Length: 52
Image (cartoon, rainbow, N blue to C red; front, side, top):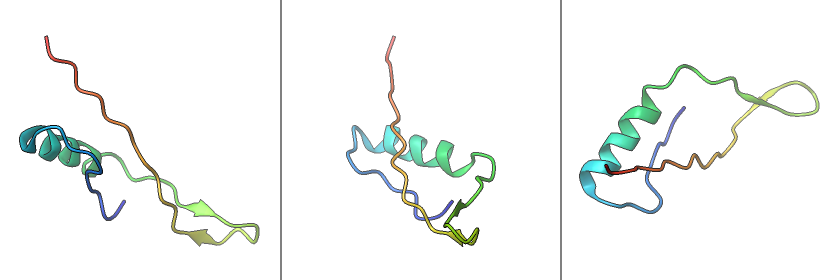
């Protein structure tokens, strides 16, 4: 996973934590095209914080 960034931030501390968690996730499998070759894929991963 490369180029992890926040599209719509809530607070700088929460944004940094979201980037840290996503960046430390296990290795993802790459996308494949019709020929079976690995290709870059853009994915938007929603992160929701609930305060108690």
